[in-house]
Every structure is written in C-alpha cells, then in structure tokens.
Image (cartoon, rainbow, N blue to C red):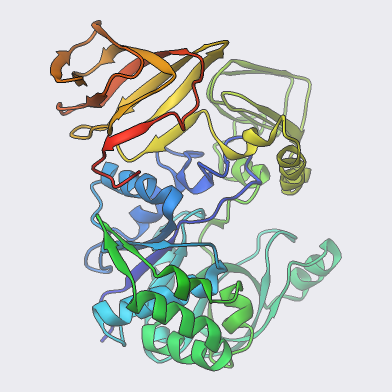
Length: 475
C-alpha cells in the first residue's frame, strides 16, 4: 500500500530565456504567462489533492521566500514548510536535502515527488495515471523519472531511451541522451523508443539517499548535514550555510540518474513544457485563426503564427510571421520564435553592460514580505511608485535620510504612523512624511491596500532605508 506522496517543488531558479518578463529578481516561475495563475501556482494546484498528497515542501532561496509564501497564500494552499537554500548548488543538493528532510519528518520509506516550479502541464486523467504508476514503481525501490512522448524533434530537451518493461507499467532506463542536434533528434523520433526527459522524479527518501551516498557521497553528506544543522526563521527553515556550501554544484541527472542501474521511466503522453522559451509559450497559448497568441494590449494586422504580449503600452504589429514581440514596463524584445532558445545570449550581453545590467536583474514590480511596489515614473529628484500591501501586513517602522514621501490612498484603508502619531488614511486622502521622520504603513483591512507614493529628494535609492522595527527580521 502506497501512502500519501510528499511533493517537493523546486522554485529557486533564475531563468533568463523569457526575458524581459522573467528576470533575476522575479523569474518565470512566479510570472503569469498562460491562464490566470503563475507557473508556481499551477504546480501547487497539481499537488492539491489531499487524498493523494501531503502538503508540499518548497525549496527556494532568500530572494524568493516571501514571493513563494505569498503566492501559496493567495491560493489558500497549506505548505509543510519552505526550505531555504543559502546558495545555489544545482538540483542534486536540493534533492538530497529534500530527501533528508522528508525522511526525518515523514519516515524513510516516504515517497517524494520532485517537481520543477516552472513547467506547464495539462494535468488530466493520463497525468494522474502516470503518477499512480510512478508511485507504485518508486515503492518497489526504483528511482523513477517521467518521459514525455515527443511531439517534434526538439533540440532543447534531453531524451531517454526506453528499456524493458517492468512490473506495474514503468520501463527500465536504457540510457540518457544529452540535448541533441536536429538530425539526431529526427533520427531518434523515427526509430521510436525515445521520450523527452521531463525532470520530474519520484522515489523513496531512503532509496535516493542510499544511492546518492554511493554515487555522490559529497552531495549526500553536505545536504544531510545542512538539514541536521538547519534553523527555523518565521515560517521557513534555513539549511545550514557551511554544510550546504560544501556540496558539489551538480545536477541530479549527472550525480545519480545517469549512473544508477536502478532508474525507471514512466512513458507519458500528457501535455508538458519546461516553458524554456517564447516559442514554448506560443505553442501552449490559445492561438487564433491566424495562429497568433496575444496577451495585454495588442493590435495585429497581416501577422501570422506570432506571440505578442504587453504588460504596459499598446503594441501594434503589422506584416510579420513567426515572431515574438514581448513588452514589459521598461523593455521590449523582438525576435523570431524559432530562435527564441537564444534569448539567454542577449541577456548576457545586456548584463555585461553597465547601462543595461539592471534590465536583467530587477523588474519594475518588486515583491516584498508585505506586498510590493511598481516603479511608475523616475525623474531628476523625484520618483513615483504604486505600493500594494496585503491585508493584515505592515511595512517596517523606518526613516529616510535623503527623501520625503507623499502617500495617496487609491484603494482600501491605510493605517499610517508618523512619529508618535497614528492616523487612518482612506481612499482619495493623502499624507506627507517629512525627510528623516520615523514612519510606517500598514493595511488593517480585508482587501488589498493600494497607495501612490511620490518620493522627492537628493537620493532615492532603496538602500536609503533605516529600519527601526521589522517583523520580518530584516536589518
């Protein structure tokens, strides 16, 4: 009898191929591309059946911890915990840490399913049938991966050659194949017996720890020690930095799956994409009669098979075919869909130049433990922002040396502290915070609070914040 599966969602990646919407501070897993949820929230939704799954475990980093927690809260999704990686050490260390934590919390024979937070999956009956097969195979002691039936000779995915059939419906893994050139991908599809490597895994905690100890002992030892010496922080668990840092930087595929003789694959035909390029977004979108996928404000004339997305202004596209036109609040990308796997090269070039580096790192909308803000307008000695504060949350009690602020309430009710005075600010009311004055903004209501903030002064950087009291433990 297989018990409940422990879902482990990896949400720490900083993908660049979906620039300019995805950036280091707000990567693709936390962005809404298709549907009404982010990729991370869609992943949470797939593991929400309490009869099949325990509450999920999230693995992420310091930068994304509140973003992940808030997106789970928006769905009213209970979490077992959020494990914080002190630094990036690739997927092998993350898997080992998760397995060690699961073994301690749920028992060594607990089955964990490892999921990426940035995949788009259509989870219908065939998906959950594959989950059932994988769980039974994992319970028998196999290290299970999911293989997706190829729909095209894709060169952006790794492949798995399927071996002999095993009891229960899974197959042995004959071999893993690196991302191939087009000719090789076409040959593999023509011969049959190959599936895409999805990067979704399922195994018993004890089994993966045992085999990691054999094939990648440095990874296993570092991650296990990081869990044993972990510390609590609010609703998060911080893995020990010194221990975790000792792990080699290596993927679970290289460290274990390509070495073990105990790997199994569940061939699956459900719709899957790693959402690694604008081409993938286009393929999964709702295409109109001309094959176009649009989002936001856009007008298309004599344009075919294209992806047009705007987060700010109105895009007008005429006489093009097979292109991606993506506009964020502060940058626009235009390129051929069949070359969208190479967007990362543009991002590297932008990051290398001082004048454009910020475009790859920060997004006009930044998220904080209490909500976040969007930069609307920047000028000489002034800046305009939209603040949004989650119900029941409050900013730190703080002051600024170089700027004053004007707050205008546009939605909800604000509780504003200025010096030793606390006042209520309602819609269409405003308040002024002088330079150097101690102040705080809070949302005591039950709906999202939205404020327009106008900053004026000689220096408007985010580092001009002196926090006096902060419930999130920030200095």
